[in-house]
Image: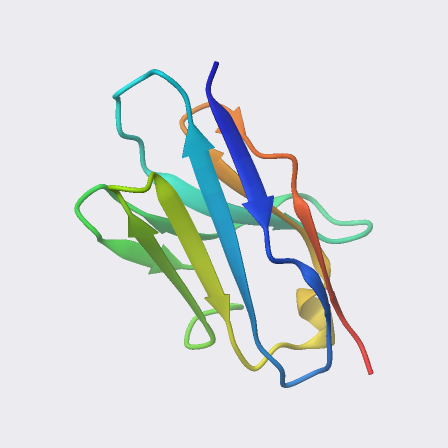
Length: 111
């Protein structure tokens, strides 16, 4: 019943920017902490940022200062603004809310 759909991934050059969106839909009214995760080839899925219903944020050290997570509670949407992208940021990015996961969106940083 609850669905999360990521969008905004693609190919970008090092130093470039990308903005990901995650739209949540469903009949439930419970608000969860929402987070962005990523999984690079050969690596475990890692939490890179999360935001509470009150707007508090936290970031992994690898993305701190470059990525910004935000949410629009009225739209049930969470965003991830990614700046100064590096090749190491290449991964499938997933949105998570509670126990629900999105399908993921591919981000590739390459020249």
